[in-house]
Image 1 (cartoon, rainbow, N blue to C red):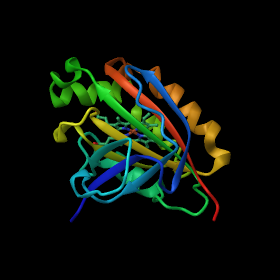
Image 2: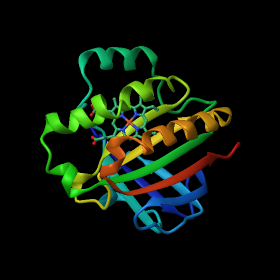
Image 3: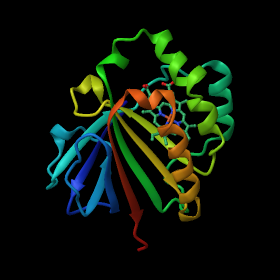
Length: 184
Ligand code: HEM
């Protein structure tokens, strides 16, 4: 199974970049377009300004009851109406990574209610988490979201809630890249 994805910023790609904002930490170069491919960066020939890569994986924190709720509510990527997307690369600090799994879970859910908050935005927002830390990438996670234009305000409200949570105190770098799919 190939679960390895590359997010290629440059002159080409199915997504047009409408905004590229550093929320915290160092920015990345703004690019006109983004291409998302199910291929490791080492196998790419496309011209690019930058490539971020990650892989999909099993859940780390979600408990049975949460997995059940998520599966009941979530919809997949590539819906026709999802002409908007967001790529939000995130790096957490050394303090976060020094914690134990149970300490991280407590911050993630008991204190920050990440899943509980996020569930309220399903199925309008479709999401995919990519892990990058173990690849030695500049970010730990590449988070990807797709939604219809009319759900942009809801997505922004979700971000306000998450960014003011305890979990986000451990975020040392976050870039908010907004995208639109052109109509062909
Ligand atoms: C749309 C609603 C959302 C839902 C339902 C949701 C749900 C989840 C769940 C269940 C996990 C844990 C996966 C696991 O067990 O390994 C997770 C992880 C994560 N989510 Fe969300 N999420 C949502 C939105 C967001 C947004 C908007 C962001 C970024 C701004 C985000 C960033 C992350 C990150 C970085 C992780 C990995 C955390 C870590 O392992 O330290 N999520 N999310």
